[in-house]
Image 1 (cartoon, rainbow over the protein chains, first blue to last red):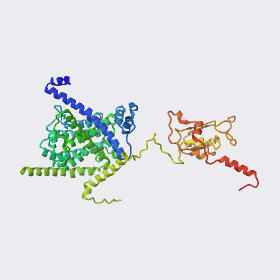
Image 2 (cartoon, helix red, strand yellow):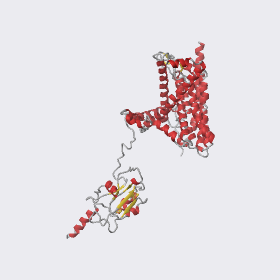
Image 3 (cartoon, each protein chain N blue to C red):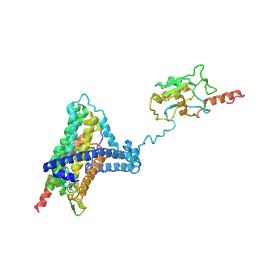
Length: 374
Length: 185
Ligand code: SF4
Ligand code: SF4
């Protein structure tokens, strides 16, 4: 440990910042997000299998499994190795570019779909502190604005894919996604305004601080209890933003073959796929931060920034656990509701949620004003 | 036809009943499958579907009740087979005599290419000797095309004995009955 301390101590503040930011990016993206995405796919397949009375993936077994006596077959049955096989398959598949596509856009669209979802994670505080490092990649004081700015870029990937593919299905998918994502962006953006009116700061770390502690001794101070309407709007809008059922119109298989990614194969398709799940991770993480108290738990002193490494890891664990629970909600809802018709989707977005969000803002403002007037 | 749409109540328009109903149904199935082990999936190589009696699977040659080859190499099945899956080599004039005393000949070689066979059952229907039957095997596998051409020995081994209608035994009994007088009805 000494040489690490000496090495870090020898750096200037700027160099330290760069080093730790890089470390955090690498660890968060490759150590956490990509594995979570891979296994979210597995969980999705397993959960959907159980809901549909099936067994789900239970066959993929790498060669070393036969040396593990009881655990091996059990893991195989759980499908633990399925994501590895899937990944391998995606890499080895032929990367086919149809002759009728617009090549340049066709190639960059998957990247544009994937990157914003990852960038959105940068401002999420996924833990309190480890040592003297804050567990957030970029502690921006305009955190939420950054998120909304970046997330709305995600739609370009889909629109571009739809345009570049030069096929009817992709095109329709692209058009649908643009209308849908832009509409719900508005409801989503307005739904969180009351939160920041309560908190009084746009920095997401401050939002978490605000949610520490309890009311009446047992209800956590989480914003989901103070702003349930905002939460409902945000949740529904998150489904629409991530193209998840019941709002998966851009890729409605029954209508559009594959939607915007009809013409894609191999790793390029995988990027769309990963992008969708990364967006799910980002949306879940965002909801944890905004509505479920981030890395805090209102007991055992877990709602103060950690002083020790163990507490620091505990906070990260709490955050990940909350996030995974929300991911399961995302996955589960897929099997609960049928897909919305397009006009119903638009109706819900513009004529229900936008006015509701506005009313919520006004209501919160009035309540705050009344409280301050006393 | 115009479908009358029922007016939804306020409660229903909030999607709450739909959500609760969806949750109830999905949870019921999830619980049943995960904890009750009620998955409908049949995990194929370990569990196999037992086909019902009379299923038309792979055609095999059968032996009669005394263990003799029933086929008399008439080649009708070869002729009728739509995809030409059957290939019969007759014994020829100097060939091996039939197993059965009351048959003239039997095939020297009898091959069914299971990759071509469409399990139509025409061979079974056309056979005058009731020597070939579609049986209950439905999953035929092999590592090469050659392996999927079943020869006479294999077909006879797989086919077993057909103890149902014993055509020639009945004929023989009938013929014997003709010998005595008065002929029984
Ligand atoms: S079942 Fe039909 S296809 Fe198969 S061998 Fe008999 S006649 Fe030919
Ligand atoms: S199986 Fe039947 S139809 Fe075919 S050659 Fe033999 S006796 Fe004739």
